[in-house]
Image 1 (spheres, rainbow over the protein chains, first blue to last red):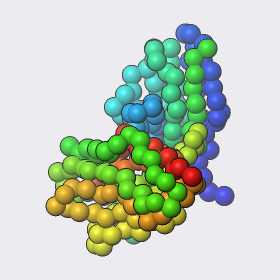
Image 2 (image 1 turned 45 degrees about the horizontal axis):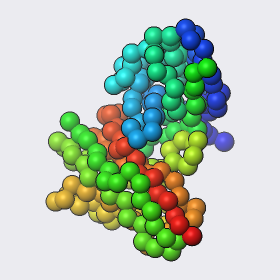
Image 3 (image 1 turned 45 degrees about the vertical axis):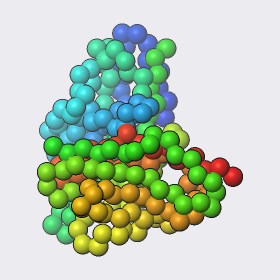
Image 4 (image 1 turned 135 degrees about the vertical axis):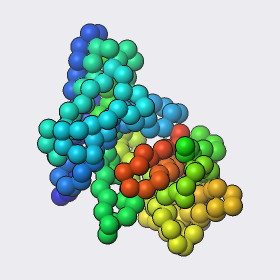
Length: 116
Length: 113
C-alpha cells in the first residue's frame, strides 16, 4: 500500500540527548514536511523540503535539524537545544502538477515525543 | 499573508443532530481550502477540499462545506452526527502549488449519545 510511515510511535528523550524521528514515504511525492502539534495550537511548520538535498526552515525550526538525502526519506532530529520538545510530531507529503492542481497534503500517523 | 480562524475549540452535539464547525479565512489571493479530521494519536485525514468552481463541496463520511467568498467562510456541516464523528477537525488554507498551508487551531467535536 502507498503511504507514509513514521517511527517510532512513541519516543522518550533524556536531558541533553538528541533524538531522530523517521519519516518514509512510497507515494513518490516531491515535497515533505514536518509539523509540531501542541494542544490548542494547531500545526506549526518546522521544516520542509521540495526536492532531494534541499530543505527550508519553517516557522519554528530552532532546535531541530533535517536531511533529505533520498526522495523517500525526511528524518527529523530534535536536538538538545530544543528545550520544550514534548509534542506530537507529524510528517506530511505533497505533490503538484499541471494535471494535479492543488493537491492536499498527506499525513503519517505521527510520533509522540516526551521528556524523561 | 493568510490565516484561518476556527470558532470554538470544543463543540458538543447530540447523536443525530446537525454538526456545524465554523471556519473563517483571510487570504490576499483566491484561496484553496481544506478540512481535515484527526482521531486520537493519528495523523490528519482529508475530509474535503475547495479549489474553484462549485461552492458547495461534498466530502467523505457525509460531510460537506460551503465556500462563501463574501463572508470569507468555509463552514463544515453534517446533517446527522454519528458517534464515530467524535474527533478533532482542522480547517486549512493555501495559495496553491507548493505554497505554505496554514492550519487553524482545531475544533474538538464531542457527540453525546
